[in-house]
Image 1 (cartoon, rainbow, N blue to C red):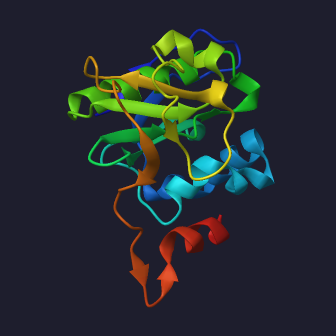
Image 2 (image 1 turned 90 degrees about the vertical axis):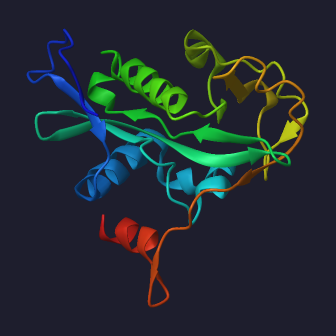
Length: 196
């Protein structure tokens, strides 16, 4: 599914298109993420849940303006303790030159809507509560969950896609998604990152 939106921003000459991420987007996505989060972004706790994994099916999105990739968001399959599947959202990034133009919100709404349509029950993330609150994320009911590394509790947020999905959630958040394919002992994700 592709979403076409025309945002009123003087910097944007082209309409924004939200679409599924494609292989050709990798280099631009990595450059955008480095600019948004810095070179040490791979050290974050959420990265432990993404390492060596593919994003959830149909839940890796990009925003483009003409030929330029201007935003990205991905969701990842995880479990919230035993037998409680969910999604981890992140990273969400928008080109710094147009960060206030609504692209982040557009990507969030599309990602949440697709996750709900795909039958997922809950989404978690680590991020700024004042920003993510507008999409329904809150720290409530996250206190009995923990990440595979340090995280500020006030930034550990969840969203029910199905009412009550986070009720009683407890335990370690663990990755459950598909592994990145390997080609003769070469991790394709790492090869793509190096090529970028």
